[in-house]
Image (cartoon, rainbow, N blue to C red):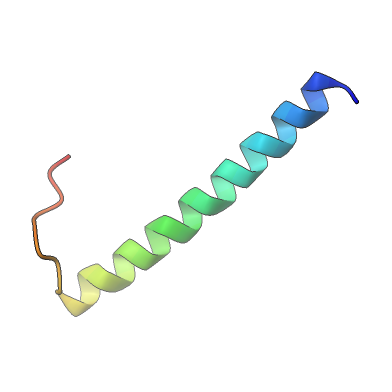
Length: 40
């Protein structure tokens, strides 16, 4: 197994999970049920 292939798969997975997280955050933002302001 080549390390480069592993890296590409990891990057793809991270990108997908990041997009999923962003979508869920946006959904919460629309609802307006944020307990604290997102100022990180």
